[in-house]
Image (tube, rainbow, N blue to C red):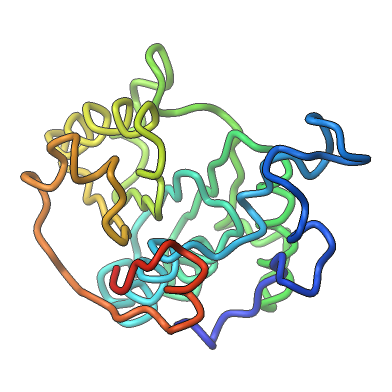
Length: 208
């Protein structure tokens, strides 16, 4: 969906792609590649990144927070849209390194002063309560896959929205977004048909 952006991803050609869920290095449950969510371009993230690339005027001149940045595709798109500041946030330090690698792969140098990385859990209780004062825009790409995460995201999103932050969510219809009441606060901006291979790899989701 986003041929303009090159990404280092885990594909069927990679050995790790075929490992059982939860298996880290040497088959253990703990390893460098345990839960490598950053290695996949999830459908909600693809849709969100496509939207940013298609509507650069929305993000130009804005400060942007990409929550759960994963592989960093939406971060890259926001930088390309001429956002003044983009913070890639993920609690997995490997995801932040993957994001920096992908940023560099797309010709954006790591010393670009518009880019920052943040490893804090910004949505949990007791986390940064000033997020709404720091960013004009918050990006959330496919984070509603988990019920507990969705339960934390819902009040956090509402607080940011009340403070005037624009929030853009990319999601293919995960249960976390359909069951938390978030949909009642959302205004649809775009709908994308997912490529056949993405549908096959993501439980039959067809749109995001």
